[in-house]
Image (cartoon, rainbow, N blue to C red; front, top):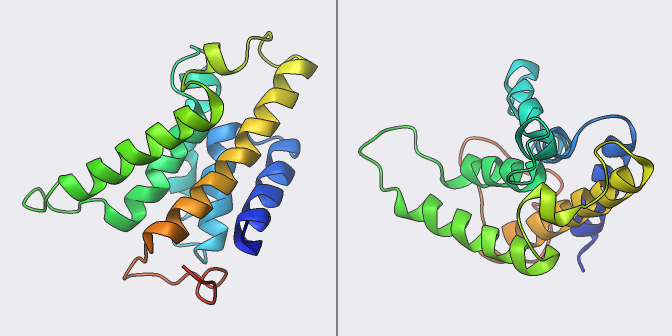
Length: 158
């Protein structure tokens, strides 16, 4: 496990313990590791994904935010650009997340009542694990965004 993956997991744990939900945590941690390309208003977009979209129990917010982060590398800004690069990466990360945690929906990942101590402990573990998994995925794929730098990741081996 790389130092960057450990750092991402640690930062995610601290942010989650500090009151951010799973989705906010992932987006905030990777925004910081990307040298803050997203402004605070943009970061607010992740808030509603917590609890599987507002406690609906659907797709885990940590997974949703991870796909947002991957989109920073391969997402489209013009409809003439190919969709396949981002679709392929998003699908592959989805499958890794599912294999790692045994599902993708909050209602199956964490069976405890929302916001109970047991639920929060489970989400902390999933959120930290997702940050680690995402960092490893980014490094493995050699993802680099042209319009911002990764000060934390630039010197790591891919």
